[in-house]
Amino acid sequence: MKYLLASLFFFSSVAAFAQQKEGALVQFSGVVHNADSLDVVVPYVTITNQNSSKQVNIANYMGYFSFVAHERDTLLFSCVGYAPQTIIIPEHLNKSYTLKVALKPQTTNLPSVRVFPWATTDEFKKDFISMKLADDDLEIARKNLSKGSLAEMMKTLPRDAHEIQSAYAQGEHLNILNQHSLMPNPLLNPIAWGTLIKQIADGDKSRSSGGN
Image (cartoon, rainbow, N blue to C red; front, side, top):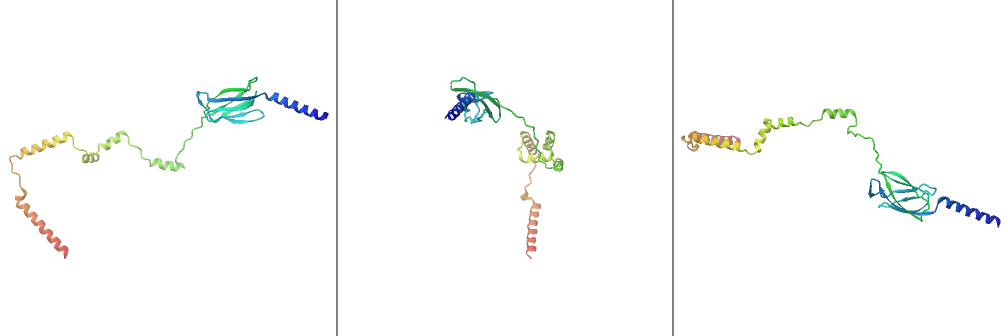
């Protein structure tokens, strides 16, 4: 009986000592914000209890968290893209503790990587030699003012006012020169009739020879 009482006293003492060591239970709640802008919440932050319990909690998509911890517990807030932050729950609380945790964004500068589309140096040399450089403004102007380019543009572009005026003046000039001259009528030209009859006769002969 004495051994039983001693064992019970020992375990109760250990439990009381452990409870006194861990601290009183506290309902720990809060919201995780961005340190640069308190209006921006940080969702899904991992909260790890660094004490012996090693309990892990996660904030929701609004950055809100609430769980039971002990006084003097050390909590580590971590999230990808933010610097980790450690929070220690103070003592002598009234069973609840509310806190706004601000995480500072952490920027990691990676070394620059240059990607080339050539597998070997020989391929690069081959493409570099056969590369066609774009024309500069002077070369483009020369091409646009070349005889071939101007001739092609004259086929499609309408005449401007200066060209129309020149053509009209030339036509008026020819009319003035020929106003006292008789304009020949090809229907009254015997040479033209003879040429036409000869062409018809030659055509009949060619068809006859082709049929034989």
